[in-house]
Length: 199
Image (cartoon, rainbow, N blue to C red; front, side, top):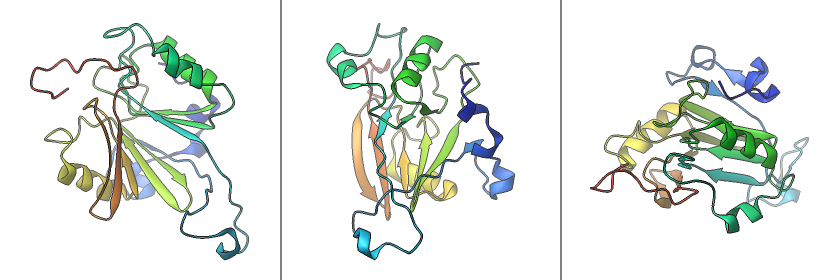
């Protein structure tokens, strides 16, 4: 069971699907205000504090099963304290990699991938960067894999503006059905394990 941080275990940060009225898997929430790019600070609602947050979105690391470590050039960019939050689409695969991510940012959210060895990670999470709601899933829930209609249905069910998913090991950022979909690809470049391109 990897998550041992206060954030992972703090019940104030988790909302049960029943309490939230959502029919989704276990859900964690986090509120952080960030500026709306289309709205200047002078137009922001009164009594709203805007804070810029640097969020790293990664996934499908597959360490040590398919690759030994993050690429050295990428790892040099991961300066502790520079990144405020990490959203990971899963397949971290081992405790050491999870602990490394926690040295990069104190606020780390990981969902369970199909190769993760722990059941401690939830199947989905919702993170609030007010006014934007971001949902994170691994992506193996989408059938067929990576299908935008399927991902859009999941985003509607989670009631999110942005859905981050992985599983395909291929980067994608696209607006579809009035929502934004991001797939960070594989942070390590790990092979997918399938002959037809499906993970």
